[in-house]
Image (tube, rainbow, N blue to C red; front, side, top):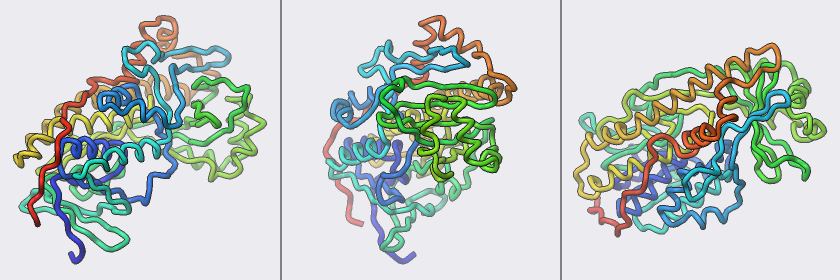
Amino acid sequence: MAGKSLSTTCCIVGGGPAGLMLGYLLARAGIPVVVIEKHRDFLRDFRGDTIHPSTLELMAELGIDDELLRLPHNKVPRVSGQFSTEVLTFADFSRLPVRHPYIAMMPQWDFLNFIAEKARHFQSFTLLMEAEGTDLLTNDGKVVGVTARTPEGPIEIHADVVVAADGRHSVLRESAGFVPDDLGAPMDVLWFRLSRDAGDTDETLGVFGVGRGLIHINRGNYWQCAVIIPKGAAETVRARGLEKFREDVGELVPWARDRLADDLRTWDDVKLLTVRVDRLKQWFRPGLLFIGDAAHAMSPIGGVGINLAIQDAVAASNILWQPLRDKQLETSHLEAVQRRREWPTRATQRLQVAIQNRVIRPILAASSVPKPPLPLRLAARFPFLRRLTARVVGVGIRPEHIQSPDLPPIQLASP
């Protein structure tokens, strides 16, 4: 392949939360790392804008939490659900034993820009924007780099290890011939924004009606809204017309009826998230590691996908920095990352699938206003259950902590 070629110790494909966090931590430990991101910038319409207490705890361990929280954000101290006129709080983050006991709702582009700027302070870190990973470079069955497409032409990036953090539609996963197991999801989600009025509540709330549900999240001057629909029903919803969709939304949030015509002018204002819950059986092969959504796509339930991806990055950094620095990386080190993160991933997905099947599916199939499911009624009644729910969502199962050091960079030999 003609074109530019460069060498590094670690090449990370994908500049999302997992990729940038891993790049930052490895560069901080002195490891030469190149992160490639296919977009020109991070200014895109992300909907997973949650920063969980466990991620804020990691920022505190790095000493950058106060600076991060000076960026615009909204705090979500609790999450509730409304069934008819009954409101039940089922997750209370305010009692968690962490430094920041809430979910911070922050535009993901702000978070990604923040991490990228912190990483750029280290001379061993390189971020290439508008560089799209297209294929793997191999030698005797081992991955030794990637090819990428850039505006200036194709490039080859040679590396001791390639980390695929390129999301649930991972190109490198397909290139490696890895196929995830589909765990199933009974729903899809339609995202849109509603303007906020001064008299609106501040509370993040799930509202459930006949055969549908809506979650509205306080984002300051607007509500970030998600309508839950049956799997594959998006075209049916569109075929019924935008006016009917506005009516359905208005039944769930009658206080917003007078805004719907202005806020939902066309179907371009409504974005479809096709929900997938899947997981690779094996997250690695010689020279290659998958993390984040590339290894395991999460349901939007609890907004934990970003949290799991960042936890993967921290675990990968903790395990890989020393063998990378010593030039002694073995496939067993990549396997160790999967061993560390597979159980919390499986446990979290098992909980998500149970909620999908036992809570969401009956609501979507209901012919009348559903009653609150038993787990939500119990959590609303007993404070310790609200704290337990908050811990599972906000802290996660087996949270990671920063173990990689802050070291000067190692020097690469000239190619």
